[in-house]
Length: 389
Image (tube, rainbow, N blue to C red; front, top):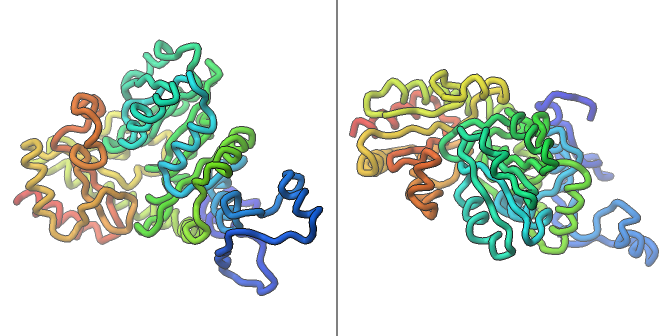
């Protein structure tokens, strides 16, 4: 595949056709593979041959999915996981040793923060945090044992934008790994490797699937780093299933078309909410009132599918708003064809202490809207009646 266009890469990147010359790739629902003879088997297990051995290691469907993500992100290699959090945990577990230190943005997904605060410390791996507006303090946090700078952009759920090039430059200066969760943007809207990221992680469950069907995750980056992640993962077993890989690979074929519509709808919803008298503030990267609007325009092709806003009246008003929603979905997922309304303080980030939530902009009245593909007037009408009720 010699095209540089994401749309073409997502559609035309395919594994080799079988003797049946199928146009759409088949499902390879097999746990293992056969060998020609004893020498073929020995050489395969000795990594002298590049071939499928066991679907925990690789599978034609997962290989195709990973190849597409690598092409779209500009990465050398990748590995696919059973979920987004499986990708996050396995990436850190493969690359860090006891006594290592992470510097992370405070505004990250709740489960990732729980991993940093409660799970990695069991292996004497610690984390220091910087706020989204404190990039000038990052160098003060770097210790002799620091190995990683970690960030999401846009952030979950407050939709803030971090300067990826600046973070990449700091990581390079101190010889640190720069890892970016690119889930909200997808490879279609943003490629962090261009700004200095060593590794990019996705929860493929979200926009990459796009229809709320399957779980999946993927990490892509340089050959040497992915080799370490691969060796860790083939022995610990977090591999993506062939069926889910097949679904996700097919989903990538429509990712650019879907995301274009998501972004168009999201901007309309953000503009409606910003003009409503029962809304305190709205955060959307391509809304001119967004604090990092200019930065978002530099890093992203469009503004994404997530809109965050605060209802006037605090948690009670937020609860009444959610209870007044009629046809939009109340769910903790995002990136679906169907618009989803979430209250982060009581769901996705409920286990994070209140003071930490407030530091990251997760107020009691904050609502996260994952804008779907319905007609924008219908989305707006349901939000409008819920605000007014």
